[in-house]
Figure (cartoon, rainbow, N blue to C red):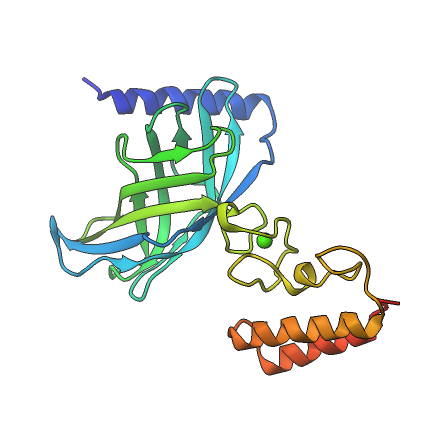
Length: 256
Ligand SMILES: [Ca+2]
């Protein structure tokens, strides 16, 4: 007799296939950043052979509306790192699928991944029954946790690893999860501080964030220089980058 989970996986697969045939996929692309507390632990058989290592990185999930009560996700851009492990998505379309069932902790996914650290170029990352949870609306979970995701080399091998993933939605993709991001909608690729704010957001061309407008161009350039110095001191930008930022501010027409 098949386990309940297998039946649910089959039901979900059928729904996903039906959906794929009927309508184009929705473009809801959700970006998640791993939060402190995420770890990877290597195992030899059932025995851990090292302490849990901090795991950082991010992944995207594309929401798939199956047209039923099941909300499905397809993981892309998986990119996890620790001192010993590098785990990236091997395929643009996952082998199985990710499913989140509203109002429960039943989640499943299986991804073929490239990995270093286990002595194999390709591995398989799998969640197991009811080991994941999310919070927030099912169509846009703002946090996800998988305390026991297993990863093992395709084709077998003595070494496996277990991941404990805690992730937060990062809508602007700046690496700071929404819950602690004080500056939403940061421009793509912009360097941000620990609060998720770029220099452009902290020192807008239009006027100080406290309100009003710049008294003059010099006040704007001084504010940019001051903030760029803080970013330099925090190790976020180099001296050359700081100089380029201040030069760009000087060349701008902000404050005129
Ligand atoms: Ca931000």
